[in-house]
Length: 216
Image 1 (tube, rainbow, N blue to C red):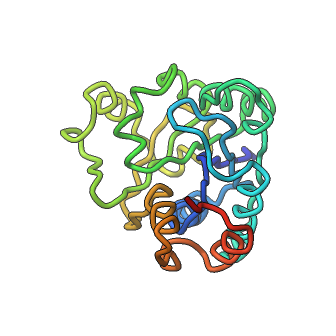
Image 2 (image 1 turned 90 degrees about the vertical axis):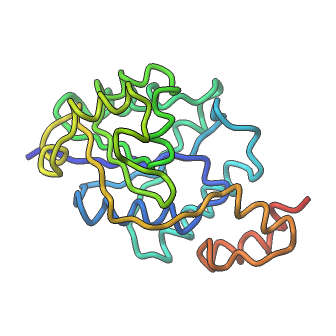
């Protein structure tokens, strides 16, 4: 029987309802044997992170525990001294799990629209499938995507069963998610002294307030 491992990466600075909803959606659709959350160490496409690695990991654990969604936090990108590239992470996970395991890397529609800017982005499919969740304001149709990405989807689109039972190379677009939240939006609200309780889990907000995070 093929093992299926789903990976959700990101800065999680902080983790929010959108992250949890995306993971929960694919946990329901794929029924993976393991759901790994992979917090970034030094992501090359983003500015310096606000919360420390340990703070971000704690917030991740609090958020997913509150959602009763079992996860494993994979700290490999935090431990990596060099800039973080997804292709390197997937290559490492493939080496760890072997050639037969199903690996599904989860992203949002906003990331899909920029996929062709990622390092060696076509090589991602050598190591994993990609599961994409819809997000309001970000169309998944070919006209809204870079032509190279749209062409890749056309040739690689597969079923959930194919993702679950084969090692890599397919893409699945899930249009059932309607959560539009960004960590940038949350940090801005917190810095203004505004409320963010509708954007992030209550236990995470409590942690942020207790540790005085995201203040100007």
